[in-house]
Length: 274
Image 1 (cartoon, rainbow, N blue to C red):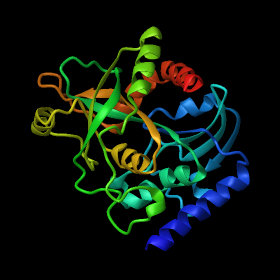
Image 2 (cartoon, helix red, strand yellow):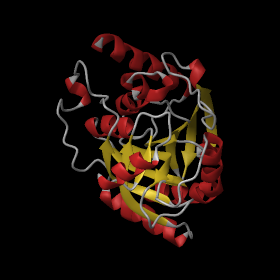
Image 3 (cartoon, rainbow, N blue to C red):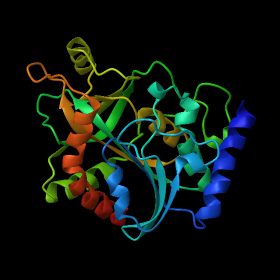
Image 4 (cartoon, rainbow, N blue to C red):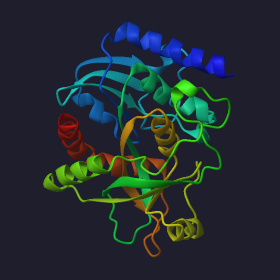
């Protein structure tokens, strides 16, 4: 399994390298409703996931399913317009294959984004929460299985997954741009159901500020491979008692799109400064 997986990652990377000659400095994974940030990339080369060998394909609305390579903030970047989720039926290894690919490509800087349900009473819809730590409540881990030493430690330290000075920088840029923001703990579940009121309460009692269905597997793999990481959630619904309403995916995407334009500028400035 290990050899086959490594072969799959390398085969996908070889194809991407045939289109993109220079390794990018920064990789981005753009979650629900955030894909338009890739439109800011100059001299862009766009590759549909369906063309990349061994790449999963996004099946969720709001995830365009394209890899976009080019320049942003005077840096070479590669952006995933949409990610893969465990609830789509992919394995943990499949949903983190792009992160393995980025690591082998030599990328050391990673930006992750998602839409999440806010459970902190001080949060508002459209707020951006920069992730300072996470709780893995998915019941599994992308590092389970055979280990390749060249990918990092078998038992990686997880005390500093998200780069603290990057969080400070991003929060400062966001505040100056007029974007309400905070920092908090993100809890990941498998989905695809949204949370019950009792689950919101339980997760809040565990110390989480927001809950979602992604990001943590990618962050775990990136951390093992020695990549610096910034991650943020756009609070797209509220899991606070008295504020819980019936929601659907379309509502989540629409809420994220309300702040996506502002986040384009924030991310561009952030990239230029790291």
